[in-house]
Length: 119
Image (tube, rainbow, N blue to C red; front, side, top):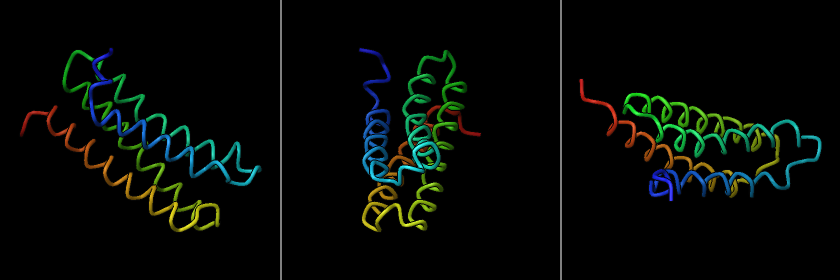
């Protein structure tokens, strides 16, 4: 088992990516290489950056990867708004995505704070 697999924040990021895949499954076919792909790639990037960052020697480097993961999370939410506005996401799907993103964001923020020394 790799160390990152033990991190709850990584486990939740995998769950979040599963949620993104689920809610984008029925996006229009002409969005397959557009919004669908963008949202999925950004969602996958979250867990990937947590995993990659955990292999870094310094906590500062790990924290930087957590910042990148957070940026990817925000990207998914921004794209989710577009998907909702275009009618690709039902309100309940958007709500599910948004709620999961809020939890993921809190966890990423907490991990980042734990890695960086206080000023």
